[in-house]
Amino acid sequence: MKNIKKYMALLALTVSAVSCDDLQELNVNPSFPVDVSAVSLMSPIEQQMARGLQFDNRFLGRYIQNFSNTATGNPWDRYGFVENSDQAGEIWRMTYFAIGLNLTKMQEKAIEEERHDITGISKVIRAWSWQVTTDYHSELIDLDQVFTQRLSYDYVGQEKVYAEVVRLLNDGLGDLARTDGRVSQAFTGVGDKMYGGERSKWTKFAYGVLARNLNSQINKATYNPDKVIEFCDKSLSSNADNAVIRFNGTVTDDSNFYGPQRSNLTNFRQTDFALRTMNGSIFTGAIDPRMSRVLVPSVGTSETAPSSAANPDPTKYTFNGNPLNTTASTVVTNVNRIPNLWGTYAPGSVTIPGRYLFRDKANFPLMTYSEIQFMKAEAAFIKGDKAMALDAYRKAIDASIDFVNSNTVPSSTFPITTLISAAEKAAFIANVNVVPAANALTLSQIMLQKYVALFGFGMLETWTDMRKYKYDNVNVYTTLNLLPNGGLFIDNNGKLPYRVRPRFNSEYVWNFEALKAIGGDKADYHTVEMWFSQQ
Image (tube, rainbow, N blue to C red; front, side, top):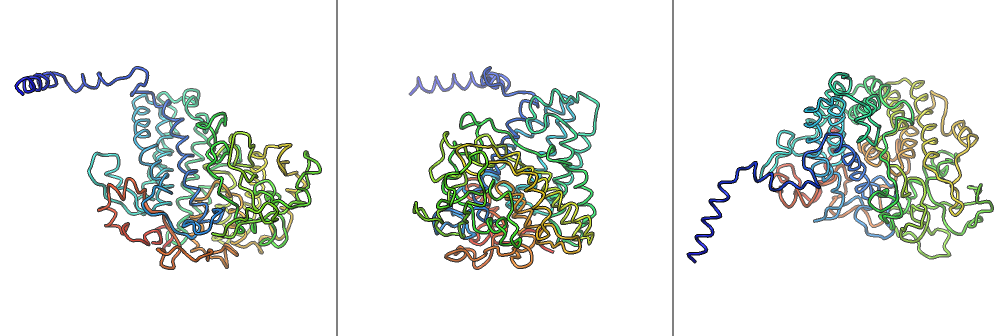
């Protein structure tokens, strides 16, 4: 015992003689530096922007009926949630952990290095992350407490988060406009895999986030459609400005989360509502040329084996959609048997090419020109300028079809992977049931075509729209099914969802007392209406 005491005393003296700086030096691994340049942090941060959305789109996609699960009883298909689980908690993790302090470090290094363009980009990304996370979860961690060392964290209301998003974007725009210091597209482009260091495109992206921020507040007395239109006009001006995160698709780690190699969508099927928006049911016989490239055909058709692999006839295929929370038939001979989103019936693998955005090498969009034009069309419609609304609406559909073409890869082994021809596009846009005269344009047409354009990736923006219109399935989202098989999830108490509960393994495990203060302990917390959707 005496020897142990002597050893402990000696150890204490040794440790006391080592300074904090010495301890830090002892923990430095030259192979993994802890102090890196701002540009080195940019690429992994951008990848996390896609990862967070894609992970949670699997659950959010059920709320907006892009797709549903193959088995009945799934809580998400019934507008519910899974208790004591991190399901649908990836956006929270993205914002506070994956991006989190890494983005803080990037901004600090950019300021230190006088890289004002990267400083601006860091503020825009932070604003984007706050906007995404509050639109998904509502209340967030108090903005004065976040990223500080505490045993618990309070929450702040959505109104303050919305204001902070605007402040950050305006600050970021100011930094992006600077040309002094060490601003360099060549330098920034090394890490910026989204826009290659082009400040003009980041500026447009920032205005797109501003447009989203304001356009979700249509129920507020302060809503100003002219400002939305202004922001849209300053935002993305063509598909060349689309904000996309790129994937190489060579190995699992650099493959699209939706791709067959990662096999994350094996049990997902397109819904009957998504099908109705494209097969002429809603748009009075106008069959959308995007349907046969975005959705997947079923078996039992007259052209199960294409008569011409180079130019199959889409009209000879049957398309089916899965009713919400109803098992998609797995009987091989059943014509209603629905393939998965890759176009097969098997689990994903490296040998499956996939379709549309559900390919290993498909890029994932964070924002598109088509979305911006749909927002402008909506704002102009609310303002009462039908001519402007129609012009933006037509441009949005045109851009969406081009976007689908840019993500369609011809394949001799997969049906209907030919590009949409100019004639197909022209005929569709000329159809008065899709693009009517200005005075006949309806809000429902704008929002439903926006739904089609955002299918498969823009789930959060679509859900934001649905919530601000209170899930109106009569005047806006025509035929949207709000009564899933088996009824609404039991904890909903007959109400539809308006928010996703915060991540279980951080908030419910470690910060539960603070959650109780905002009602997060209630079983129906996910049905509480958002600030942005209220009057």
